[in-house]
Amino acid sequence: MLASLFQNISPIDQSITTPHVLVVLPKLDKLPKKYSIPGEESLSKLLLRRNMELADLDVTPVSANLPNGELCAWVMLDTEKSVFEQQTCLRKAIKLLLSENPDEIHIAVYGTLQQKRNFAEQVVYTVWVNGAVLPVRKKKPLRKPLAKIFLYGYKDADNFFMQRALAEGNLLARGLTALPANELTPLTYRQQIKKLAENEGWKYQEFDFNKLKEMGAGAFVAVAQGSDTEDAAIVHLQHNCKPSTQNKNIAIVGKGICFDTGGYNIKPARYMQGMHEDMNGSAVALGILLAATRAEIPVIIDCWLAIAQNHISPRAYKQNDIISALNGLSIEIVHTDAEGRMVLADTLTLATKQKPDLIIDFATLTGSMKTALGSRYSGVFSNQANLCQKAILAGSRSGERVCAFPMDADYEESLESDIADIKQCELDGEFDHILAACFLKRFINNTPWLHMDLSASSHKDGLGAINSEITGFGVSWAIEFLRNIE
Image (tube, rainbow, N blue to C red):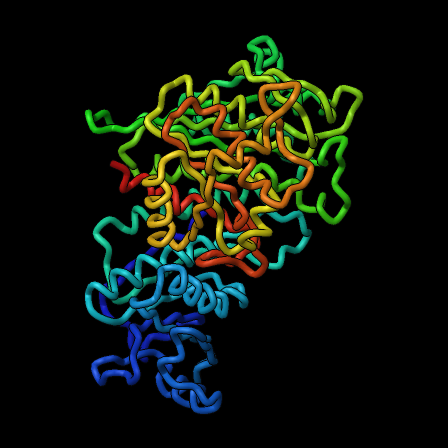
């Protein structure tokens, strides 16, 4: 539940007393006389003690107790810096206040009208996504959700309509990803999605295990058949925006492996830890759909979720199996821990049959992408160079940064098989993120396509605007991308 937002266009001044205050300033070397900020004297003394300049607040926010006991944090935003850097600075400032579990935060923004608008939009979003609490199962949770936000210095005509939509989408993605695997099974996940679809007015359709087997979706079935219960499915959701001749039809595809043991090529404990988060791509897809619905983005979205588990059983698929995918391609299985591309293959085939204008898929797909980029960026691939350029621009504008990778035809030589149409992967995984993209490309039938490998789905101590390890990366990026689609 997002905090209520109350606005006041009057400037906040030192007579305002409230337990937790955040002051957001433009980049300055000296405070103008027209500014009367809370705790100005305390700030001056604090900076002097720390041997800091006022302008240092655009890198290192600070906080101090004011004479009446209030905790005040001060931060500067340098609009010459990237959105990511500004978001990071805001997150650090807000964390100084949230560490005390406040019921409410009072925010004051300063600067020109354009600066105050920019600062207000960023800080409202950042407080919303960090003021909420992700699911925990402790008797005494360490944090409680923020109840109220008070904003001074700027009034938004739309009451931060877009920022609320983005925050709700991000929180949905993070909340689902945080759930333990014994709670979020493929069956319970499908039940949650169906309830969400009813609440949001989305069309709901699912292709269960038996239906997919009957259809010949052998790639998906190969992975799903190893689970104890055959509760896996491909779920299809559709949101129809207000009709227009300009509406684009976009397919969003998400990998939803609720737990990944690695199958017969079982992961060691170190790498199996956290594999309940392997459904993050599907959670991000759902978050995008929710945000697009709430923000009334003028695109028709078909959302396809590949929901299964990768377990070990007498029925589980294994190395050297030959699998027939839904599009008729035969696949030589090389490594059972490359299950994500298998479930996505048939899901992409289903999405392609609807003839969308563009397919975007999201998946925590390869360890080699995290080796290549770390967890600060996610990697993108496309079959059209201009889409990669637009993806990078959307990353810059949203603060969710992406890096484009090559997918030239000669890479596909590594997937040539002597006994099937294509190999699933190679045993050597140095550039597996590229091979995974080359593999998926075989299932899109030349539809314009973007593939995002979510190496930034989790990052210790938070990333950009997000303070939790689970980042929800991809929701803000996608909405920025879709808002500017032509």
